[in-house]
Image (cartoon, rainbow, N blue to C red):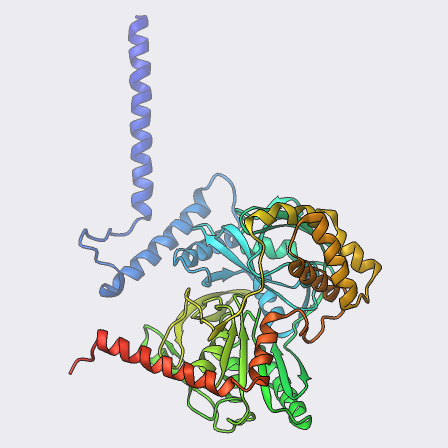
Length: 498
């Protein structure tokens, strides 16, 4: 009898699982739509596939609302679905933006906000919208992040003690932005091994556009970002250069992480007398466009131009650099640019919205530089620390010696800086020139940043030497000749069909 009870109990449990399974099958059958066949009847070749998947999403949304163990705010499910759809594209620039991020975007492109002044990008974005690492694309000049010594390419591995790996971009922005005057601590990873904390006091960040000055008879124009105001500010600079009798011009696009496409085309029009600036190519033929320069230029062809770029030059700044390079209007000096050759559009939804890549852009020579970058005509890099120097540099940063020196000597002369760099070199065994640059950078960050620093900026020095030394025309001719030879080589390897 006892065995019979056990047998009955076991069979009852088995029956219960069968019934439960049947119930689940019925439930999911009720929310399902006809499955696509095994021949892959989906995508563009089957217009009904999109409607079917949309119906499935709607059914699952309704099912969760009715059956999930806890009551869920529909907005949470909606935002999760939007985030997932855009993340599924595998494109870090196509993202869902809740209300807070839409506000941030508007602040950055048009107004001001409380924050630290860093352009950041998500690295290795996951399907759930979280990131494996957070990279600094570029610091905004004269902001707390810039003054704290944070550089392009630095990784922020934690914010106020919380690791950034696994955070969404919204979570990162909510922690970096906030009330002006409040402190935030970030842990920086520079290179493979060097890690150090940085305290930053938030401030009201006003989006800057330009800085300019005249170096003897050379107009120096630094574009910080591309906003609706950049064109007007650049015009003001050029008018001042004219009034002071400038003979040549340096256009500094270093650490310029981009902005508005229209602004980049407008800036290019200041230097190009008509012709193609950039083209955008979309999979929708009607969306592909050519953007041409206006035929009224402010800087005549008799004015030599050198453009400065580095790895923090991206997007709109690459459009300008690529146009001037390809059109033979400027000589590029510095380091290879970032490599962002994609165009995004922002679409509002409710109080939020989404940003999606709609096209690729191509320079006048029909090159898309995404993930490739624009190489300079002459590469000039700042001296860097070797792996052997990393440990010594870490000890120097932790000692706070450089900051303490500048706090005690805010107006230190070049001689004072050189002498102090010599002392540090003897103590830490680091290159004296590198140490001089670190001390001068710290001095610049403690006050309003100078428009330029010719004594320590080796890339700017090279640009000035080219313009002053009378070699500009010859260099431009050499560059044009090399370009023709490269084009001929390509045509020989891949002859045009006849």
